[in-house]
Length: 568
Image (cartoon, rainbow, N blue to C red; front, side):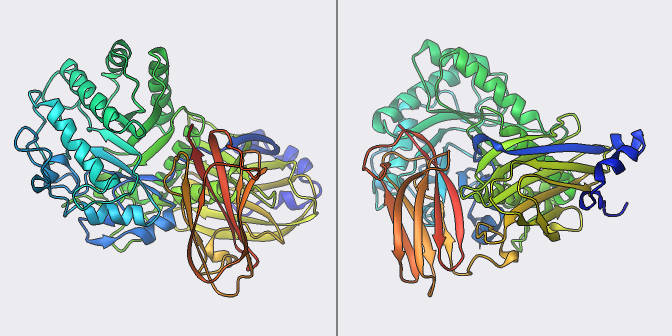
């Protein structure tokens, strides 16, 4: 079928009515309303296991991380699950029941130090799993939990307090263990694990009351109720509860399991975050969907549906490949050894564009969880850009008719662009044209599953478009993720400027798009900069906890926004 031009004709409604009922049934109806604000997007697209350096490939993966919009890294299975794996307790210390746990001579940080330093110094965020990777034997339930906790505490001290020639990275999230509900990781009973966790959690919180301590990256939901009830009965309130799920048939599975976990946490009075620390389509085997558009449409649907879930963070498994795997890496890896993104990873890049360029979510209709049809939309803080992602994983539709109401700008001229992900196009510009009309946009476009579209509307004077292919952002300018994030009470915002940019502004906004504080408003020399924010407004009064945005703008035509979370 060719291009539908109905939206460009004054009689498009009459033409639609004239179509057969069968054809009309295959045209999906989609709407978005720029006047209906839902708040900020959940940052669920930017977390991944492993990175930004690949220990297996001995390669800096940060260019691929930047392209895919990945900023948060879980330290787990660094060596693809094989032993020794940098960062694991058996690799750093060995047997925790032996030796003096306070003696630096018993610790070896040589493998993990450069990996953590690259994450932290690059402005990325670390989610550190304390425990062991798949390549080690299961932890014995007779292991002394107090000694194990003391070793874990010294690992935290090394990276946050400078112990043993260490660092001051202020890593916030520390996860106790991985998949204790699998016999490969823990050889004891559930009750034995709960008791072990209690000792470790209480010990670490006594050491570090201001850090986020939780666990336990459960592989399933069988231990869910018993774990939460144990925590409630023993007055434990972990800062987060983490869990895993893999599914290749239902992109709504993560929303469903996230709801189940949150419900059980609420029933038992657990107030911590709900963290999906491993997720993906596959858990092993040969899966061509890991390299084609079916995977991209699937992940777009999953990321869209999770925006309405109780999940606070997610971490895809994984960025690089696993040892000895076939080219599709058993459905795990997001990138190729040459650092190019696999087609499904472009779903994360599309969400990066959505969340950074248009961080205020607006209401949209058209989702169908039974077919994997997904629609999600946002608008920019400066009201100059509107974006909509449309993903079709498995419907029988042939096109969609989209209406976007209440366009936020006071102009009759704007640009319409459509980007496409399919088996031949990787989030590339497929169409661009000038449009007119001050309040409503409409078009009908062909789409055949599996495929993903990103529609972008922007005023002709807009500078909020991120994509380098459009040529708006200067090459040497970059806004990095703040760190730490989440934070209390202070965070640093790193960015890079280039020559001849004129004035530079760095502004904090609340979720309603109102200015909270202007941190920078002056000409800056070319180079790297870092500005601190202490969580106060223009009157130096503390602002409330919650999601904020920060935006870098320059006279040279650059504008980019990122999301951060201020804790109580």
